[in-house]
Image (cartoon, rainbow over all chains, first blue to last red; front, side):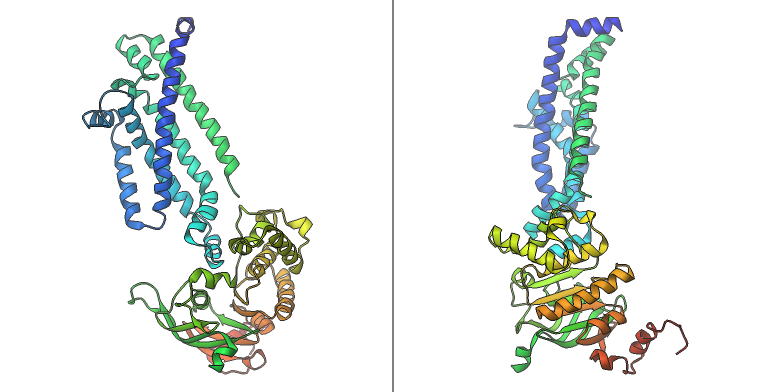
Length: 211
Length: 255
């Protein structure tokens, strides 16, 4: 343990910059996944065919092993290649399903009496979506964002395999050199990030829950 | 056209079935009129089509046959949003928005209609007083902080807020305890008479129907099987009327 501790102190600036790089990957991918997933989730509330298609495709991305997904994307022009961009695309695709599914569930699993009276009061479908469904479904949507963030923090360590940087760099190097300190210098901050994100988003989620 | 003049709501040979036309008719050839300022009670068992009939009036359903006239105009010709904003709607458990305060719930339709802020605030206060809730005490509460009876009062205040000429009520007092229910029924009857609203009231409770109705219409399997004023209703000999009358008999089976 003293070996690990002195290693981490010695390399603190590298660990810090890898952590920031990791956080950057996660934040960009999450922002993209939310910007795609939440509006798409709103769109499929009343469109059954699009719903099956969107959830189906997002489900497929989720089942592809993460390393394979990174591999698939490399040969694709514009979004592919070696580096950050490919990693962000892959992470976004990975995070999409929990966000999309929870958005759909959050917007649809609402007390039918509330929806019935909203309609009967003469609210338009857009008003019902933004003023009733969305605020009431927000906690469930956020639960999806939380799940997706934790997944993304984990999967982002693998992004180092295609040269995207982040904490995975230490892990891969540690495995290759059979160096525990090096490996843990990547693994511990990644785990702490996931725990921290879970805690903070969990608190926000509880605050937004309407009873 | 005198009939149209007298009846604020009128159904002419209305049938309704779900979906593609092969499903069974939920409403079968119903004709009825609701005169201005009167309370018509639709009485029937669960599944007799009462709620569907209400939804045919405010354009949440459209007839598969026949037509529904509101203020002399077929619901199909109405803009559905305009039609509904002119019709108050109260349901069981009230269906209040849990993320809105009591005041915001009551202000809903005036807000949708873009009333000025001061006018809405004054109206909310007036409505809460009307249904017997002190504005200072209740305006800022959330629905979950209210009793069932208080929620239902807010539901009535919300339905009346934009001063619609018509009220549709779907078993509004059905989930309340008997004492609270009786209290709200009495107050509501007085309120309805004072405000001269045209009301269609759905219930499966004959006692409630007799108390509130200017006219009772009994539905069975989507058809009108009896129609009479409350004073004559119990003298009708239709088996479904007798079945409902038997439900009033507290001794049970001694008839």
